[in-house]
Length: 265
Image (cartoon, rainbow, N blue to C red; front, side):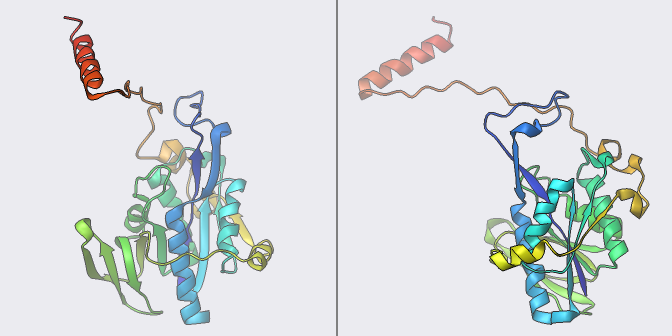
């Protein structure tokens, strides 16, 4: 059983950030990066399955991103797994969930994966669309917001619990192969050991382009995306005032504000 786990390097935005010159994203000088929180849980699930079934399970982390994104692969490989895959080309800049999903689906086919484990969403854009797009492109079953899963190698069906509204969970049967979007809290992600961090640096990371999987430049990036950013901006903040003093003083100030809003009448 082979499990492909897409992991994403997400941006942490500085409070005093500036927008890029084209007005479509934050200037990279104001960004820090880390692994997407949800992806920690999907990778931990893959690790648990490998530990349970041993050599019957191969787990492979995948990231779509530039060379700096290898940090998230090293983070994963420091905890387990033997190799990683990074896909990048300048043509992939500004790809939306669908364009990224096309790459992931092609890698899944190339790897003959049985399952793809994604995070439910990414903390930077929060579309929660990549998993379902991958499933649609592969014509595989899909389950979202997965809070529990029972997978055994060579199983034709798996049992999955999904988290719904109001604290309700549903238990469903999913045909394999499948794409599962993993929710926070399904497990407790481990920390990498110092030994694991050192060993990760020696593990192979295969670097590929979307073109290696038969995708053209027109199918990725902004051109190949189904959604396009028109502009990104910081909305104007409404005015707020902290009213202090005695009850009488506060009431007087509120009356003054109401009068001001009415034009001083």
